Image (tube, rainbow, N blue to C red; front, side):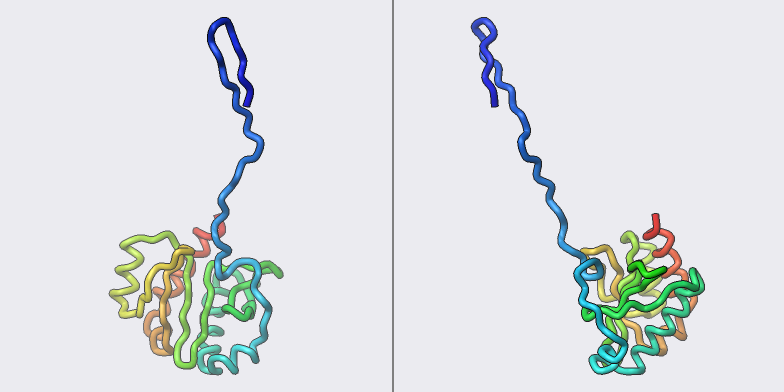
Length: 158
């Protein structure tokens, strides 16, 4: 800060020395994830739920055949050409698979998911619809799930 006298007036001049930028929390699907293996997830969940993840991967590959599963200790994400591309993340449990689909929140998407009878567990702070999927859910709602995943991919890659 500087004070300048101009005649009988005093003028103050302020200079920004340090600007502080508030950063958000590291999202659970972004950086800092410790790598894991498929065996790690088979022990933590089950082979059956990993088959659900494989089925979802096949849906995702209809968008781009280069996608692969990226096993982390916190979740199973996606990788494209060696880079994380987590518009969808998966959390295998013993009897079901929770997925997080990154999409802007809207009543239309919410109602489609609920009307299909899928277990919508909420909308996360990181901007994801959290959905609990069992084997029958994927078979019964394959087109809706594909459409939602495709919308997420289109929105996320912008």
